[in-house]
Amino acid sequence: MRAPVRRFRRTAAVLVVTGALLGACSGDRPELAEEPESTTTTSEPTTTTTEAPAALRAQARGESIAIYPSADAAEPERELTAAEATSAPGIPIVFLVKDQTDDRVEVYLPVRPNGSTGWVDRADVELAPVRHRIEVEIAAHVLRVYEGEQLLLEEPVGVGREDRPTPGGVYYIKELLQPPNPNGPYGVYAYGLNGFSNVLTSFNGGQGVIGIHGTNEPDKLGQDVSSGCIRLHNDVISRLVEEIGLPLGTPVEILA
Image (tube, rainbow, N blue to C red; front, side):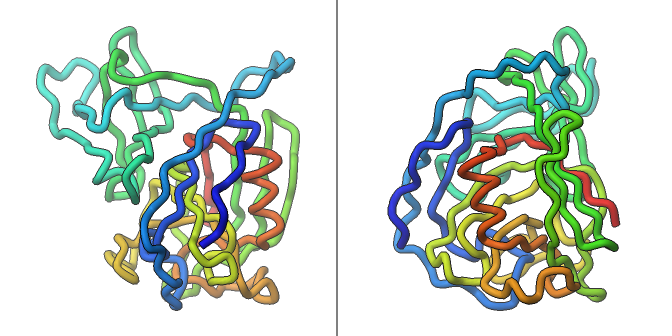
């Protein structure tokens, strides 16, 4: 198992987890960790930019949150728990904001079907701007990361095979995971998205969650090789985590 993750420049939770938690990423099941480690949080960076944020995220104040079907619904339609929304204990429930009123916030949900939204009480969440965004162009096998309108990096990726395609749509980073084996198929880090495979309802013990992660087969980047996840060179995803510090709630647009 890797040593505990050092503190990064931006807020993020990093958890050492089993490979089964990312459910649609690889045909080879990584080695299991003995126990998940506690999350490691970091301080917010000082920023001098005056650009408008690319997006807004909402973090639940508790380990469960009421989801309403509309902005003015009297009763919630469900209670979303951290156990449902995240892959392991200690990860907060985070959403990408779609719309808001004075009292409620409409958010993208980490549930099937992809693109599901719901409303949460403003008092139940903490709102924060997110200045980064990710764009994945499936046909070109390219991932781009922006801060505002500034392109920070553009790198080749491996994507889903024809029979297990990477689903297009608007998603967000819901968790940051550290696989126990950095030389395994998930690489050194893995971002779990709120989206799911449209073909696989379960995979390697997981729920078919789509992720962006490293790889032990960098020679296959630029190809259709995965079961739906997006593979990056280990050096690149390490830069996203350790240098750029993408926060939870970062929007991810997949252009299929």
